[in-house]
Each structure stands twice: as structure tokens, then as C-alpha cells.
Image (cartoon, rainbow, N blue to C red):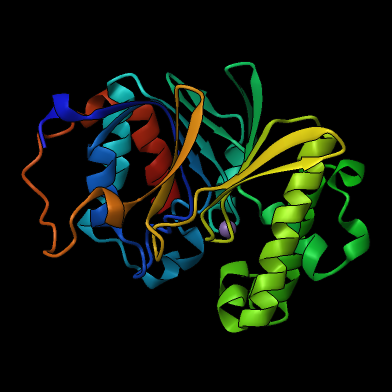
Length: 282
Ligand SMILES: [Mn+2]
């Protein structure tokens, strides 16, 4: 693919890549990223799976994703990294900003006079699993809930239990999963309506979606970027339209894609970021 063939897109949002795990389809993601030239790239959580890092799985194809993102930044793409639960360790660096890179918990952008609210979505885990009465995010606050989730996970691990893993839960029981997805989407929609956003964009549940609903005379669009384990999906915003794209529809998949030789990235121009991710990775 030649560089001037890249599709110019105003905004691209991906999530749940889970770099560092066996399931991650890094080669496919790299192929997709190579085919686009977005003004803004939003990495909406669970990009690097730091929970799994003890397993010591970090192939070259995974490193290439990070290099690809750095390269895009070098070419002027603004990158927002919104933290998820599998990369919650990054939350202590929240609001870290350098050049055209920003690390945050949540993000509000104005897209053609419409307010778009981006966050990973694990903030709902605790409200849905443990206490329905906590569910009103407005009342308790986003950052408090994130802390609460981290605390519950810390306790669970202390007592030899597993951390809350929603994608795992979804895989466990079909009936339960459907209810969970419906609850998740409804919670996101309700809170976004209350806050008067026009778009609410999540990840976390690995269920790609674009759904517009009307409630009390207001219109809201719920979007989910899916994941790069099973769905291989991304959200693209261009000329006032949202599109959900799937790798399988964008590329032929009848033969396995082999990575072509790629121009080397001059890593020296990103010393600070490199230091940051080396800190994270070691
Ligand atoms: Mn997640």
C-alpha cells in the first residue's frame, strides 16, 4: 500500500486491542492503520493489556502497532489514549500531554457542533455487577467510580479471586450476556442524555454498534468501536457521518496478509513517549 493511497478521515476510534495477549489481531490492525490517515485517532481503552503482562507475550507485530501510532503522530495525527481497565495502570499518568499525544480517562470533543463523549466504559462494571443503586453516574462521579472499580479489583486479587472481566463474563453465558450488553448500552445512553451529549462512544464490551435513539424529544447516538480480537472493527467519523468498519469487509482475507518491509521509524524524535512506554512495558 502506498502512502498517498491512505484514506483521509477526520476521526478514527478503536478500542480493546489487548496488545500483549494471544487473541490480539495485531497484523490485521496494522494493515488497517496503514490504510488510513486520520486527523484524530482515539485509542479508547484496553489497547495494551497490562493485566496480562506477566505472561510475557510481546511479539514484534504488537510492537509494530505502537510504532505505527508513533509514526502517525509524527505525520500530524492527534492521538488520544483513553485508559481502560486492562490498562488502568496508565491512569496514574492521566492528563499527560506531549506534542500531539494526550492521555486521559474520558474525552469530550465537538464534532460539527455536536458534542461527542468518549470513554472506555469499565466505569459501569461496578454499578452493574455489584449495586444497581449506584448506577447513576451523575450522582457519584466518573472518577470516583473508576477508583471504586480499581479498589474492588484490588480486594478481589488480595482474596485470590479474579478481577472483574466483562468480556469474559459476556462469553460465559449467552442469556446473561445479552442482558448485560443491553444494560451497558442503556446506562451509557441515559447518562449521555442527562449530560446533553449527542454522541456517546464506548468500547469495553467488545460489541460494535451504532444506534440512534430518541427519548424525551432528544436524540442520542450510542457507538461502540468493538475490538481487535474477534470483531476487528473501528469507528470512523467523516463529513458529519459515523461509520462502523470491519476489517473483513475492508480487505480480502482469503490469504494471510504478510507484513511488507516498512520504512524505519526514527524513534529518537519521540524520546519522551518512548521512555513512557518503556516504563510501562518493563
Ligand atoms: Mn475493558
